[in-house]
Length: 115
Image: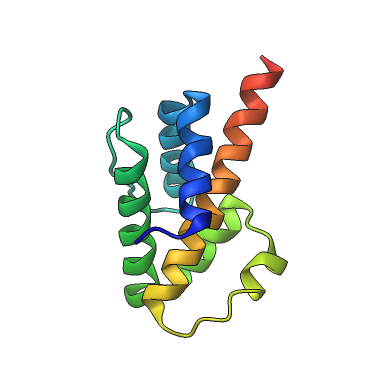
């Protein structure tokens, strides 16, 4: 079952036709954080959400320092991160996935408007 936030984000991602630049931005931020994010550029939004979720969950469970470094690189709001009231890694990863995809989409969207 998808949450309202997930549905709204997926609709936003699909409506702008910016999936390829979005995937490239996530890969770039991961690479700059010393991480490898494997994802095809022509992926569906639903698949991207799943892959990012699994990527973040793996980092939370196996390399929390790299997880924090990646979130810093992506430039997620500390306020937004502190507002997460979950304690289970799965639930944290779910909420951070939405925040991360939204932030990366903002970067890509603004860049597309400048050009």
